[in-house]
Image (tube, rainbow, N blue to C red; front, side):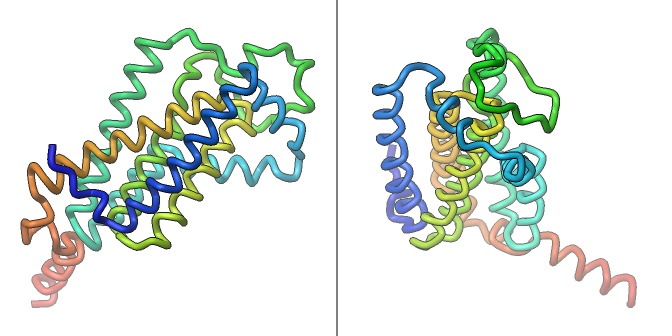
Length: 230
């Protein structure tokens, strides 16, 4: 497979920063027991931070990502199509892992005795199963890595990986996932992006098709206004 994605500065720097996060995460997993990271982060949890963590974690929702994808139609239709395809891959993998392969993996609130926590974060009804992998982490790493590819700048790669990591860590803060769930979700998200870039720009070659490089919605809106006022 001929892969030229690393020539893109945005994605290259995203990937370099992510690899550092991944290696550090693997060391943490090797040196700690299952669930230790959850209890460690929970020690620093504060009521005044809960709402902020909840809003940050919502960036990783599939619905948020779909809105972002549709918004890109104002700029380039290719971006919208690739983002939506990326999200479809994420949804497919999420269903396979959570519902078929690891459907009975307990989340922190079911795994631990409530007394193990420094404090509870009570913002919503907690899920108790389907912990592995983190769907929010998969979504945010898929979307942010693809955005870094679109922008193609060093600063974009570093900025977007920072957002992805923070969103992933909020899943632990909110007692929804273990660290291994977040780490696995991040890796699967980037695999989805690599697949999307390969299919979109190297197989279908959307980046070489004039129609998909133009602002689709803007053009349609202008045409509608022209027809109306004519």
